[in-house]
Length: 253
Image (cartoon, rainbow, N blue to C red; front, side):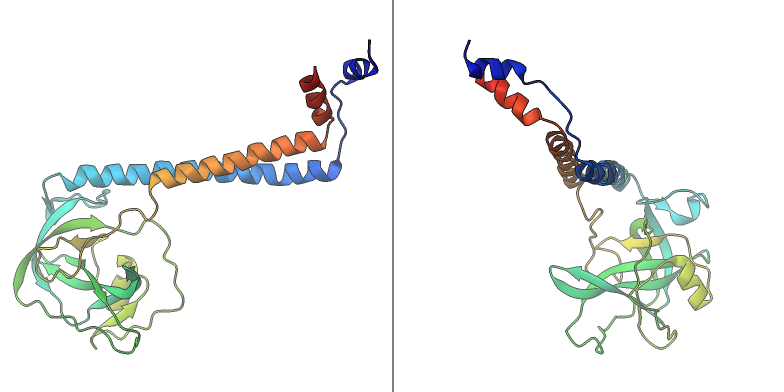
């Protein structure tokens, strides 16, 4: 029997601990695994949001006054009749469409039964000179609006405090939560905004992105993080054993 064959028989799997590599794997493997599961959770969340939106957008619209108070009404289609308060339109800042900066115009609205509601009329573009605000046309008289109810699902990121000057033309804001606006304007508003349909009185450029990242992308990100976790395990295994020699010996047989 040749010396090469004899050497091949003598190669067996053995651990050769490299504690630096072990520490690296122990520290970063849980991070990669958690990132993968986080992306899967995000995929599930986005899928549920899209399912809810698609189901409710084909349902018949409901009267706002008929909806139970304190219920979950995200994306519910609603009809309201009443008057716009044209005194202080709110310009929700940092809204970009087609690469162009602009605002979403939110107007206070009082329904015929006395309920106050924040109506998101849609997007309007702005120029480079932010001191020049867009002109927002008043909508007089009683009108009937159609749209769907919406509230922000995450914490609003603000680059600074909003400077409120009510009753003095448009106000630029970064946080459009009904609770905050109720506090600033001294008037209790409904818990949800009404996002207008395009043919409603006062509508500007409507149409909103329901999810900023599609569920399939989150699945792809989860696969990438999982692949990195597997690669880290394999690299750790090779660095802490003679597995490479065992594989080479096995392939030579």
